[in-house]
Every structure is written in C-alpha cells, then in structure tokens.
Image 1 (cartoon, rainbow, N blue to C red):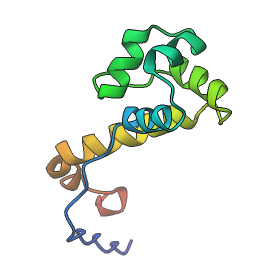
Image 2: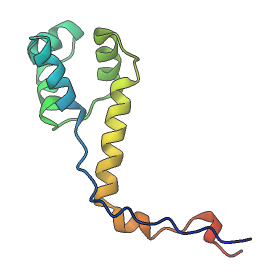
Image 3: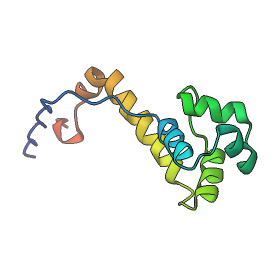
Image 4: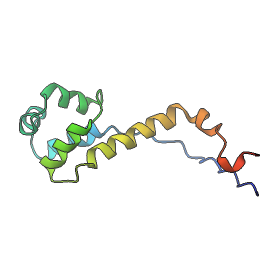
Length: 109
C-alpha cells in the first residue's frame, strides 16, 4: 500500500483557545444581565455560573441544556464550545505526543 504524505506542520503559532465562559460573560454584558440573574433564570447555582465565566469550571451537559433553552439556541451549542475548547487546550499541551502517533496507513502489516 502506498504511504500517505505526512502532513506538514502549520508554521503559524497555535492560538490559545478561549473558554466558553468568556463568550457567556460577553453575552450577559450585552443584555445587562448578571451571572446571578442568569443563574436564577436557569435554576443553576450562581457560584457555578461565576466559575464558568472565570474559566475555572467547564460547561456541563446540564448547563448546556439550560443555556440553550434560555438563549434560544441548540441544546448542544454550549457543550460543543466546551469540547472545542478542551480539544484546543489538549492539542497545545500534548502537541509532541500527538505528532508522534503514526496513522494506520503508516503501519506495515
């Protein structure tokens, strides 16, 4: 089987991912809504909302469902942002490891 070309490394420096809590904070500011006010509306503990906004806690499936309902977006929207953030952080932290893994096409059987 012919070998696939190895992907070339992107020469640009990877950007630091932005935690979805920062987007949540921006939206709350645009609507003049406090984290406490949001927490009260979506029936989620206010301290958890504060920690999400600070980037100290991830958006859980429950929080994603609640935010989706409140903001009128798809229920997976917020959790998808969180997964994208988590992947971005992991890619930055484990870049050398990931690049050392061969693809299935590179294995001689």
